[in-house]
Structures are given as C-alpha cells and as structure tokens.
Length: 312
Image (tube, rainbow, N blue to C red):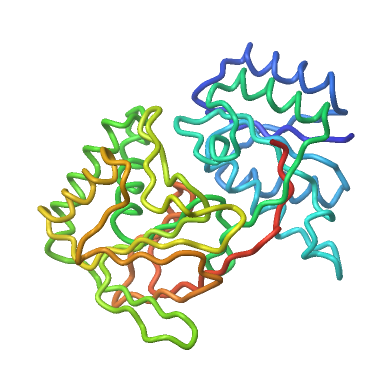
C-alpha cells in the first residue's frame, strides 16, 4: 500500500521526536512518503497530487483545518467518468494533532496522537474502513460542521488572537464568544433558509450546519446541539432567530452544560436535509470545520452521501 503522510508542522500535540516515531510506525505498515505543509491550502494540493499519482492512502497529522484541506484536495481530484466514486480516490486516515480534533473523535479515534496512531495501525492491519458522507457549501466540502454568523465570527476572533501569540483553549473561545455577542447584538444581518418546494424560514441571525455529531468539544465534554446528525444521513441545522445577549447567552449555556438540545421560540431545528440555500441580507462570516473562510451572502448546501473512504 502506497501512502502519503501530510504533516502540519504547527500540530500542537506532537514534537519532532513524536513525528519521527509516527513515521516509523506507519512505515511498518505502508510504503510511506512524508510532506510538510508550508502555507494555507497546501494540504489540499498535496492530497490532490497523491490522488493523481494513484496512492492508496492519505494520512494527516494536524488539526481539523488540515483534515478539511486534505478532504477538499481528495474530493476535487478528477478521476474521469467515475470521479464520484470514493473507490477512485485514496482513503483518508487522521492522526489527531490539533487542539480539538473533532473529526477524528467523531470517527471514534482517541484524541491523543499516540493512541490514535495505534488505532490506525490496527485498522490498517485489519483492513477496516468505512464510507462517510460529507457536507458541501457551494464548492467547499466539510466533514463535521459549517456556520454562518456567530460561530464564524468567534473563529475569526480566535484566529486573530492566535496570530498574536495566544494558545487555542476553551477559555480563549469563551472570551471570543462573549466579545462577539456584545458586538453582534446591534448589527445582525438576517439570514433566510430556503428548502426546495417549501416556505422560506426568514429572520435567522445565526445558522449552524452539522454533518455529524457532536458539533465540537470543550475539553472532554461534547457539545451536541444536533445529536441525531450522522455521517450516514443528510445535514442537520440549528438556527437562532435572535442574538440578544441574554437569550443567546442562555442558549450557549444550554449547549455547553446540558445534555438536552437547545429549545425555545428563537430556535429553528431541522434533521436529515439533502440540501438547502442560505442567503444573507448583507455579507456574513462563514466557517467550515472551524476554519474561517471570509464573508458570503449566499451559499447552496448539499449532503454528499458515501463520499469518502476513511480508516477507522
């Protein structure tokens, strides 16, 4: 089996020695090449090239952003008439190397990179893999979530803080969320959700789209607003009609502290959607898999079943 290990050198949970151990362990199972990412978007290019060269497996070491890039590289590989078949692309294995590792944990892998590597080696020996569905927003694929509004603004704030030297922690996200709530309360653009053949849902202030559950983690605690979301079903959505500080803060507390999904008049929830369109009255922040992608005013979402083979 020919494989490529895509390493984000900024992976937070491994040292250079740890990466050497990982490489040796993988080489005991596969014919391995190693490539380090050098810029944003580089993991997508590396994964696409691996697919073009006919490799069997792409392994990522990094956080959810590195995984998202690699997935997009694999999914945009043009294999000719059979390009929509997952069998024509390399399988994906994910070694957790970020601060949260939502996608790896959603696949049932340990959050520790060493234990995760052991689980992947065992799966390779036993030839265990599964097909999973992905979400797509216009031409950008996502593995576990996308968001327009509040959460994307929080991701932007966290990215800005990290560029200034801050470390990604639950406390940093909490502070960014509270700061964004205070800033957003007076100038929220309104979102509209349109399902084919149905009346549009208007006046939405924030929209979260999930391809699986949970949405994220705070430490070891899963945050699970759409617990029925799954790689094997369509997309789930959670929307808020208002972002007044008090009501939204209560909803955030429900998300973090309760095992029940958020409820209330301001909450809009839908399950197992094959596709829909979101439009905004003015450009609004957008994120996928925890990566801030800028501002948009319209996105077409789709569920893409059986899109990707993963080692798990």
